[in-house]
Image 1 (cartoon, rainbow, N blue to C red):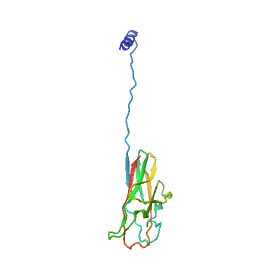
Image 2: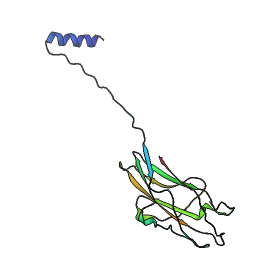
Image 3: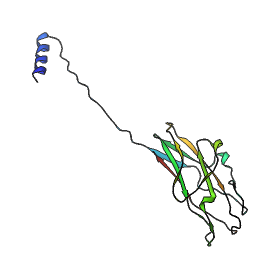
Image 4: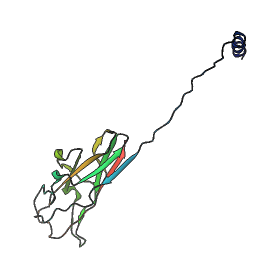
Length: 162
């Protein structure tokens, strides 16, 4: 306190303008933010033959129609899980017969990850600072001697900041 008073007194006596300054630290935290927009809500495989594998959807993955637009300011990952295929009449087959893939390029898709009941990470990405499309691809293996019916399953894609 004496030092401040002595400094002020010296400035007043000198006739110079007095300037006192101090540094102030200013901080702010930017929250993680993410918005995901799915650009499709179903995948149709059409008519399939029992005992066949790697059946592609009626609309090929390489067209890029199966995608979600991801807008985030932080690193993120995508995981997938699903339910068994069921015809509603007591016939079903395992969700593991559906393989999926995700990629930031529609030209680099290779569905090799089998869908399970628990979320499995299928992609991890860094934030680009702009919205990007995350492309999805599917292929379906139909078990031999599978009962002839229309089957459906639910696939859940989960996007989360890391």
